[in-house]
Amino acid sequence: MYQYIGILGGMSFRNWLNVVTAAIILILLWTLRDELARAWELLGSLDIWVLLLIIPLQLVSYYAGGAAIFSYLKQRGQAMDVNAWDMTRMSLELNFVNHILPTAGVSGVSYMTWRLNRLGVSPGRAALAQVVKFVALFAAFVVLLSISVIVVTLDTGINRLTILGAAGLASGLIITIMVVWYVIDNEKRLGGFSRFIARIINGFGRHVLRQKKDMLSAETVKKFFHELQEDYAVLKKDPRLLIRPFLWGIVFLITEVSLFFFTFLSLGEVVNPAAILLALGIATAVGSVMITPGGAGGYEAMMVLMLTSSGIAGATAIAGVLLARVILILITIGSGYIFYHLALRKYGNNRAPSQ
Image (cartoon, rainbow, N blue to C red; front, side, top):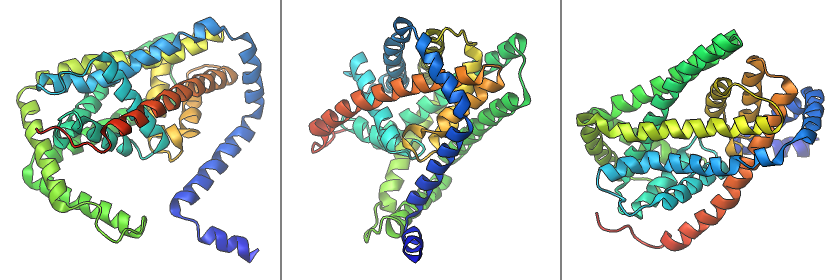
């Protein structure tokens, strides 16, 4: 008995979170066992040819995600040699990193910054390009979300949970962007924030990873944020630079919704795309803070919860969400793994071109 207590007491915080997450998932599976059995039966009516449509749609989604970054960089005269396939491939690499290293997107941002640096893009500009993508996707989501709430309300009615979820998601995104803009807009605030980030990362390295030396110097962080602020000043002066990333954000979201729409269609169910968008946005937000790969467990549970709250049968929601997620994660991890390691082999020991 005491031996087991000792083992539990020696577990790291991350391992504790893994245990708690696994327990929650098991409880959910037990609670939904009847619905899962019904969902399994629904797979017998699967139309494989309709389901296969999600593969090209997934490629378009990855391309649009990459284009949201590179359309900004190309307007700034950088990464001009990057073609459509390169954008798609790098987007796959980014998603692979986010799936295997679940850190609320931080790992993916770090990887993409490194990857873009190999192409001659400064770390500050690479980071801002990803902020631009985030802002563009947010703006696109708000536009489509507004339309979706109206459509769902007119079509099937909308309950309080869905309204609360949509409002909470939009509010969270707005607050995040306001905080980022507030920090970047002032050099003094930016300097203070850079020192704060350095202390947090170095403290994490010392106390959690047991690193003896600092992982990041304050000067390195300051230089990074200075480059970020220079590009922000250009963007503030000419906000038209956001138009192309915004349009690609629209394409990205439409294809993401289409992936689930055609998955449900392959099961013989026509689901309102507006309801899918609402569920997708909230599930993505929840999944991004989960410690499991790709937000597994939390993402699916939230998708099912939001879809059922919009009037979709529980078994149908479970079958469609799990089927789509399994296929998409396999595509992301399978192809992303290959491209990620090819990139490491090609650029791992190379310095970035002079800027």
